[in-house]
Structure formats: structure tokens, C-alpha cells
Amino acid sequence: MSKPWKQNGDTIVEVMISMAVIAVVLVAAYITTDHSLNSSEAATEREDATMLAQSQFEIMSNASSTELGSAPAKFCFPTATSLPIDITSGSCNKLGNNNLYDVTITKQTNVVVAPDLPTYQIEIDWASILGGNATTFLYYQPYLTH
Image (cartoon, rainbow, N blue to C red; front, side, top):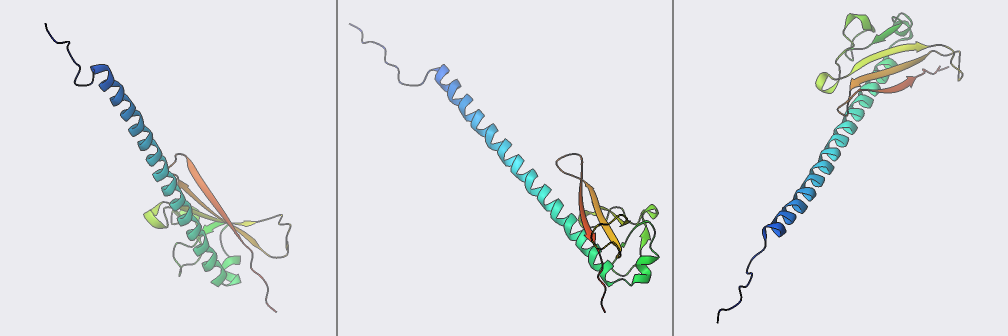
């Protein structure tokens, strides 16, 4: 009499199902990691843009009222020691870390809070890693000292 045949391994169907489960888990891990890295990079971009806006704010706070008063309608400070430069010169483009950011400072009108003081909007634009353009704003209003 012959002995019945015993199965000692997995069938091809079981192996294929296992491979499919592993593939799904690996794809999900890749997507999650990629999304996390892109979000981290986008946060770094926004932080750099905010720091650039703050540096423009600091330069403006150190500038004289004459320098700000004679500034063009839309301007920036390409360096900490420069005078206000018209944005049409191209010197306001590609500033900051990785030369990624465009800076525009405009004097605001119709200001509700302290309308007797000049108010400036510092706008930073850049092409975001998440696609499209991103923008951050900071407002500056000098105060009077007596």
C-alpha cells in the first residue's frame, strides 16, 4: 500500500497572496513617508519665508523715515545695507535660502488701525514643493517716539 501524499510547503496561491499583502503594506509605507517628507519640506519653506519677511521687517525698522518715504511704490531691501529697490529691477526676486523667494513691500492705504502712521505689507512668494505658489504676509507699522 502506498502512503498518502503530504503537503510540506505552501501552495502558489498562498505565496501570491502573501506577496500581495506585503506589496500593499510597502506601498502604504512609501506613500506615508513621501507625504511626510513633502509636508516637512513645505513647513521649512514657510519658515524660511517668514524669516525672510522678518529680516525685511528688521531692515525697515532700522531705515530712516526719509528712506522709507522716498521708497518706490513696490520695493524690497536685497541686502541689509541697501536702500529700498524698486521690484522692477529684478533685485527683489530669488532672495533667501536657495534663492527661492520673491519679496514685495508695498505701502498700504485705507488702514483702519492708526491711519496716521504708514503701514507696509511685506509679501513673500515662492513656488511650493507641494505644487502651485505659496505666499506669506507680514505687516509693519512704525511707531512714533516722543
